[in-house]
Image (cartoon, rainbow, N blue to C red):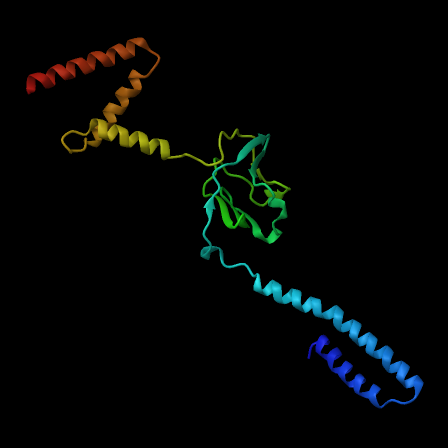
Length: 227
């Protein structure tokens, strides 16, 4: 039996005693006891209601939620600190439990639940460089979420999310389309030679560039006579 239920039971019993009491002292004592029990019940009842509301508002699992991507944010670097600012007007009024931030060694995840009737997320699976996740932190102000990543050195970050492999993949695809002929891919050795020639041609040495041009002209003439 809970404390609230015990008080309610005691109150009902004391009220029955009051009905049969005749001596003034007993009546006065019972009235005081009734007041004490009634006040105690009033104090306990709101706490029970609040607990019920918290159970009803329990957050659903993250995997069941739909998020809109957060694509706009600002960042700045101060020595070994990377500071990221997400502007969301009035975010400070949202319950603290609705703002969740998790850090990994080179990733972090920001989730905002129930802001303007929607859920929002900034999920960086691989940052520009590694950082010390245990020392990183965040705070929420009136209109912003401030995230601070602590990096092990003062390496200059040019952006938050790494673009590693993305540029190389696009370059490779472009070169592949350029050099493939009749649907047949170039031999890997040929690709290597062309890449080497391209590097020579793009060098700062004018004699090297002229040598590459002459080689390409001779190759083109030989191919023409074969055809």
